[in-house]
Structures are given as structure tokens and as C-alpha cells.
Amino acid sequence: MELALWTYEGPPHVGAIRIAASMRDVHLVLHAPQGDTYADLLFTMIERENRRPPVTWTTFQARDLGSSTAEMVINTLEGVCERYSPQVLLVAESCTGELLQDQPGALAKGANLSAPVIPIEMAAYTHKENWGASETFYQLVRGLLAARALKPGETKAPRAADQPPSVNLIGPTKLGFRCRDDVVEVQKLLEQMGVRVNVVAPLDSTPRDLLRIPDADANVNLAPEVGDLTCDWLKRQFQQPIISTVPMGWGATRDFIAEVSETLGLDIDVESVGDSRLPWYSRSVDSTYLTNKRVFIFADGTHAIAAARIARDEMGFEVVGLGTYSRERARDVRALAKEYGLEALITDDYLAVERAVEALQPELVLGTQMERHIAKRLGLPCAVISTPAHVQDYPARYSPQMGFEGANVLFDTWVHPLIMGLEEHLLTMFRDDFEFNDTAAPSHLGGEGGGAHQPDIVALTEEAAETDEPGAIAWAVSAEKELRKIPFFVRGKARRNTEHFAIENGLSVIDVETLYEAKAHYSR
Image (spheres, rainbow, N blue to C red):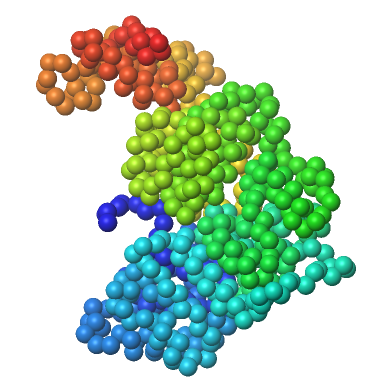
């Protein structure tokens, strides 16, 4: 076990809270100490929800450990049923509560409560948040639908001829990345195809909605990290095929339309359903200077795979690094990385990710909130494409990632950091111009600026300033000015290479000539 400053996923009980918070008429009782109640803030602060998650905590304290905490669990369960009257009561424990071994699920089953109980075993010390969400949703669906499963040898009744085909959208949750808007976009897409959405779950669904899941012809696995387990079970028990293409990007959206058509037996021309501006943008003159930009991608498995394909096949970027923190989808990410000639980075250690980014020096980072911090520290452009994310990535405006409109949003989101980086580079390049330097008066006022001609005095490097060693390297001011003309996203690498070259050649001062000699040396 390691002590970490940041973590990509919370403990499993946070995943359970996501399921309860996503639904209505469901309540979750968590056996946990008072300190674990911080998870409420994830929804009220980051998702900006106008209600607290439907979660009640037993909130035992140190003084309670000398007596029976089991009685506290039962009292909490009875109080929840009386106050909230939920259609279903989920019962679980946090990682700290698990240490007490009170078995709150078993206590709830034997308490003769007024609401049906579904106990969830969290396995807090071997799994994480996405697994917790997946397991909670699976146990909830299974608990409600197991009695209605098809018997061995029984086949599902065919859809009536006068009924339109229908699907369920499985997997979207609160605190998922843009799930709210993605559901709307995919519903629009399916509506254009003449396909009815039967149930969206768990987002904005009720237990009664879950009872209608078997009525659909197929299940769209819209968020595999949450929906895989449930979709597999529904396929076995109700003979419902799985539509597994995630419609993220122009190409994947077209593939999704084709898979829906094939699965439901529809005759639909992909060209007639919708269109995106992304392909045209990617071919336009304004975007040609972005071709072959080196991109590093690290996200949950679903978004990492989708982003890699969009980056390479639709935007003309070069993917130089690919990884995920989702061990459940590690095999899929490794397979795609191998296809791209890369070694996948599978880790939940943000320091390992930072080392990889620093070594590769990409021109764009696509990642989570953590990669945003890493990129900012290294001076690299970055766009957030996956959870964990902060409040700015849960916008109030409509901003899907899926479907044709999602492809437009992705183009804007990914390209703008590069364009802003170009503007910053140009400003830096012309900083010493007589008209545009920092001390110059505005040109429209007629001032000629203070285009300074400073003597080429020597400026010590940070390392040299901190040591009195005779071999310390210093930069001439003219060399520093020339270095600033190099784009900021490769400037750090250029500086390190030049200093290394100077040390190898026994130089104590780096001037402009040294800078260009080092460039020629490393270009061979």
C-alpha cells in the first residue's frame, strides 16, 4: 500500500453512492465513520446537484467501538425506511466499516424492514470506485430481475410487428464524464433511426424502470466501466444482444449506427442519419499545421481507446503515449497500444504518468484532471477527456462527447489548447521586437517602444546559482532570448539538451552559437 497525494478513483463505496445518487426512489445506507461523509461534496460541489445524494451514514465514532455497532446499523436502517420510504434499500459499508465485520447487509436482511433490501459486498481493499459502481448496479438489476429470467430452453418472444425497435442505454451515472449530455445526444441519434429508448439506467431511473429493461430488443453499453457486468448478465438471462460500440468521434458514431442497424435488423443508410463538421475541420487549411502533432493520452479505458482512434484517424495526430488507470479495461488498452506500436501505461500512480509525459515531451496531453496539473507544471497544452475531473468539466451548457455533435465538441476542446499555445509562442517570439516588447508603448499611440539592446551579460542556470562548483553552466542573455523563440512545449527539452551538450564539451557559458551547435548535434 502506498500513500498518495492524488488518486484516480475513490474507494468502492463512492461507486455505490454514484449509483444511488443517479437514481430516484433508491436509498443507500453506508456503515461508515463520520469522516467518510466527505463523499457528499463530490455531488453538491462538482456535479452542482441541488440535492444531497440519497445516502444515510451510520457515522460511528471511536467511543461507539466499545459497544455493539450492529445495533446502530439496525436503528439507522429502520429510521431510513420510516423517513424516506424507498422502493429499494441498498446496504453497504465503507473501507473503514468493513474492518468492524458487522455484516450490515445480513443485519438488514434479518431486520424485517418495510423496503426490499439489496446488500452490496464492497471488497474495499481489493477494488476501487468504478468496480464499486459496476457491482452495485449489477446487484441492483439482478436483485430486481432474477425472478423474471428466462428458464432453460425458453426463448424470448419476438417484437410485435407494429412496435418500433427499442434499446436500453446502460451505464451512465452521476460523476461520469458528460453522461447527462451524452445520453441526450445518443437518444437524438437513435430517434433519427426510428429506434425507441426503452430505459436509461442508472441515470435518472427508478427501480420500476429497471423492471422494464427486459422489454427492449437490445442493450447499448454506453459506459463499459459501469455497464459491462450488467449487460453480460442481461444477455445470458434475457437473450438481449449487446451493442458495444461507444459512439465517440465521427468514425465511431458511424460504426455505432451500423451496429444498431445490424443488431435490430434495420435497413438504414449511415449517410442519412446525421453529420459532423469534424471531418471538414480536420481537412481544412487552418488545421493542416496541426497534422502529426505528438499526443499523449491517459484516461479511463473507454475514453482512452476512443481518444486514441479519434486523434490518429480523424485529426491526423501522432499518438506517442497511451495508458489507463482502469485495470478492468487494461487488456483492451494494451491491444490498441500494440496496434499503434506503443507499450501501454497501465498504472494508478500519477507520478509514473508524470515521468512518462516528461520523457515523451508531447505537444498535447489528453487526460484527466491529474494530467491537467502535470501538463501545467511542464508547460504543455492539455484537454480533459475523462474522470476524474473538476467542476469546470461539468459545464452547465450542453457539451456532449458522443454522437456527431460530440465530435464537434471534441474537435474544439482538443484543438483550442494547441491554437492558444501557438499564440503564446508568437507573443514570446516577438517579445524583443521594438514594437512588441514588454516595455514598449502601444503602437497605436505612436511610441517606438523601448526595444532594449542589453549587453550580453551571463545569467546563471538555477543549478549553477545554487552551487559554487567550477563546472557550473551559465546562459548568456542572448542565448536565453534565442531559446525563448523555441515553442514552449519543446523548450524544456531544448534547454536540457543544450546544457548536456555544453557539459560534454567542457563549456561553462552557453551562447547563441552553442545553442545552435547543440541543435545540430541532436538532429543527427
